[in-house]
Image (spheres, helix red, strand yellow):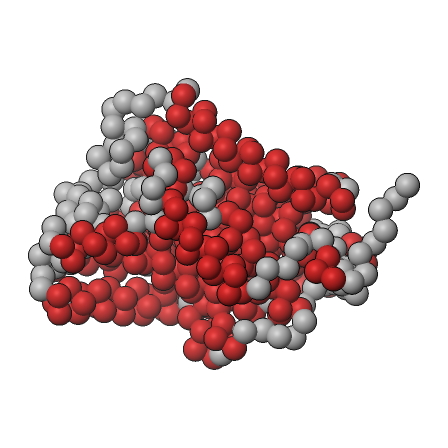
Length: 403
């Protein structure tokens, strides 16, 4: 006996589900999701708050970036924003799986897909990589390490001087690259999951994340301790930096996109999703450190992303996520994130902005934010946009030749 297709209630099947599942042309895609563009900035800003209140910079000589120093204000902000970096990174991994699955039709060109993804991340990465080498990283980075960072293979090393080398925020792009390379294999597998088993597959992925934590706890060496965390450097690498364990978040995003298209995602309104996220951040502060990287925030982040996408498709996009300013901030968010190695880690070292007064610290944070935003806009306007135009031109030429 087959389960009937949902037609009403929170699980109803949308009208566009059939066309998405049966699409055979590379141009047949679901509606755009502007709310997720706006939401990207808030995730990038969460990472900014984490970076700007660190007591240990990832750049030698590892001075604080926290402009308030070891004062009650500085310590309070460090405690308050400690989880936000982990939340932001987890958000981007889930979002990547969700958006790519949403935008990719049933039949697609693997070569075209790789062209688009590589031209999206590599040109900005190369530009900031070169700037970082010239300004600061060239002094202490070996040629081998610089090449590993350039090619986005640095996170396959357990050495922190390698996996956060040159431009520290670029480490997450290594995971993105692995996701993109495996997506042509993962997409058919996700589509093979029976509709009625999608919820169970999400639970299995969460269990996979829990298994990674248990493996890290009991099988990965716990010594020597990391200078920036209560666990060993190897444990930090395996659970947070290494791309393969982060694959669970990407695939969760893929499954959530399919569930939404098929009307099998239980709708959770935006306010409830935000409350769940805030609660998960508060709870994470009382859990063992390994549980604070991603697993605590997976469900509320996925609910938030999915609800925003659902409202976009229904024509009820939240105004605060789709106004001109927020959309612009979302467009420059990738560069805003990527440039923080220069605008925070290097700039704080050069200017020596530590142990400042409350007003002085606020001014320093405003300076870092302005520099990050300017760098993000420059990267978007003069690197990302031309690169994506090039990708579209190359793909259109290929289609003309094969027509």
